[in-house]
Length: 173
Image (cartoon, rainbow, N blue to C red):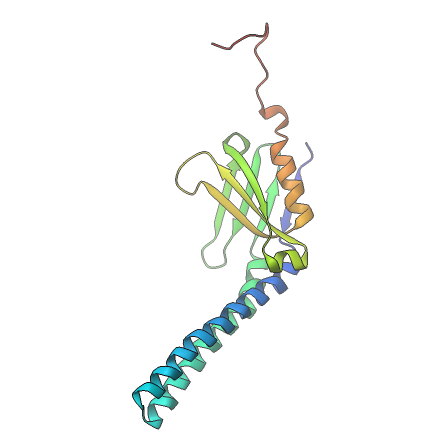
């Protein structure tokens, strides 16, 4: 099997990640902001409470908006995946780096999923399920749909990793 070189996420994952983050921030602003305004009106809060609460909300929403904008770009630059005859390697994280190596023999099955933003931008999430109980699945978000399908197909075509039936046929027991 040909080795898949160390590959970054698809560049379109930055735009899709930003849109997802901004959508979350907007929904949070509407829900939490509505609750705060209703509470301030309901309690007849003085002007100073309105100003203080508004400042706190602006800081929180500003931080969320900044994380929504810069987070996907950082994730794009700090994540890579590689597939070879031995298995799958996946590295991610900026402050805390995680390097995950999954031998082919431990891979149980895979899924390729797409959310609405992923579908819009031709992206997918590859989920690899492994034998074991703790951390038994690895979700790799931000791959192009074609790459996710190719990696899935390569993982399922185990090649030499699948044991042959014993010589002489019959049961192995």
